[in-house]
Image (tube, rainbow, N blue to C red; front, side):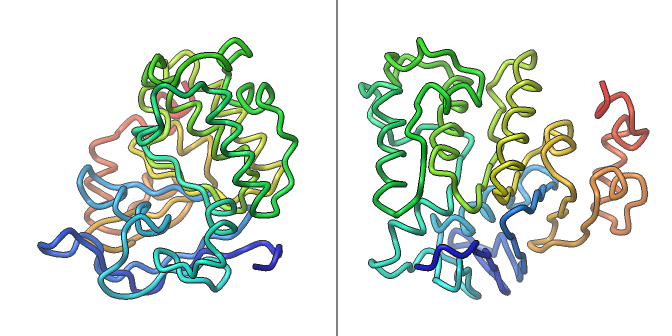
Amino acid sequence: MSSTPAVLQATDVWAGYGGPPVLAGVDLTLRPGDAVGLVGRSGVGKSTLVEVLGGGLRPGRGHVTFAGIPVGRTPMRHRKAVRARLRTVHQNGLAGIDPDRSVEQTMNDAFGEARKAGRSTNHDVEAALGVVGLPVRFVTRRVGSLSGGERQRVAIARALAARPDLLLLDEPLTAVDAGMRDEVVADIRALVHAEGIGLLVASHDLRLLDRLTTHVHVLADGTLIESGPLRDVLRDPQHAHTRELADALPDAVAGSRALDA
């Protein structure tokens, strides 16, 4: 696979879990350097879309490609490169990781995956953890001993350690203490900006989206119904579902108390 910065392209994506489709014709493009948010009411399919974009769920119709390579049906010869260059972090953080492994071991796994895929990394576990506000003493901690917020932060550090082209985050900091969240967000924002990493963040946390993204897509009725800078979308909604979202978040529409506090 070429080292040229890659584009993630979803075209007419339909997906679900055996019943009515959750996604019904989604088109989306994400490039390195983009900073995109995904908003919508609970249950509209934000996590499903992230899962499809990251290759964890195959669409029933339509397709997703990364650098022109199918995602979810990636040919064997491209899998290592796609895995290193397109990273996904879910709300449950390190699910599937052996709880007896140390944080250092799980971080070294990520560095190893990146190296095998031809990605250049500094292999600095301490620096990688520092991006998410975790001190060096965490390297010896077992994954199973971490709190929910610590697991989420380690998961983000692992994803960023590979210096991916694109990073997909699904409610990534829900368990992180509110007093620490702003610091972590600022460090993540600085790194993705410096490295030119494309970012898609699915979240109900408007403060998080306001600080990490430059514009958002509103998801409703299985598709993306409205796009624009977050504050503009909420202040002047063009779709009924967006108006309902804005009505439920009057502080955000006012533009100061919820987002600037």
